[in-house]
Image 1 (cartoon, rainbow, N blue to C red):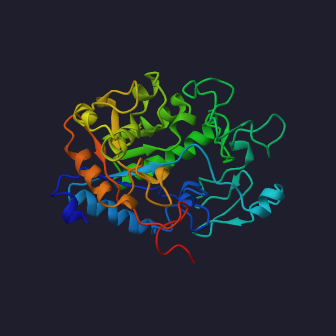
Image 2: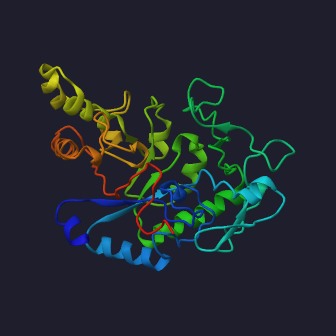
Length: 331
């Protein structure tokens, strides 16, 4: 509640993606957008606007998880017959298909030509990327070797096209005009830094962080986009407080000043927990609410550690399985 957050020193709240997404009860369906409309399972566009206004009035800024990398994988009907148009239906009724979206705003309609594709084959991605290596022929991901590939099979926007950049710009401008002042860039490693910055840097954001999973930075991303979302600090704290058996090493945890190697403290934001580190059950080496009092201890230590400039706390929902979404969306 805003009457608690502001007075207790919380600078901002971070939201999961706010655009219309595919149907489904899993948490990750919100990360598969099918239009740039703002009616989602979390509420209507009006609900979102009122929430932003309430937070800002209480001195709490709003950070939105922004997806400019991809659109949703199509439903089975369209995926198996890619020339059927847009037979899939999103959460708020907008239609979409295989590498195409009808849109919800008029300006967000997109066909297969708006996504990276194999030469002469609009229905096929140019390349793919995913587990286990998350690489695309190079030894690193920071060189943008994967930037034109479909992540987990999700159609990858062709940001070399001015038409695509215009769609993204209109979406980002709307968020800014509604009062959103902070962003988290989803799948930042698989985005072209130059193209993303052309959209984002037309607005005076208070803070931007990137999804980042331990890669050694090149200095390009933080120069033109923002800070790194650092997950390594959470692992270090959980290990030191929950699994390290040599207690003589415990004092060293007080000197922790960085998480991911190469990411300095002034360019990082540290999360104690997030949706990508879920576990079905209690796991000592992972900071999760399922560990009970251990997790509370780790959160308190996380907040008290003097060397960290920016931290974020988990404020989500409970789950029985790692794919489970929030209450009320299982029907």
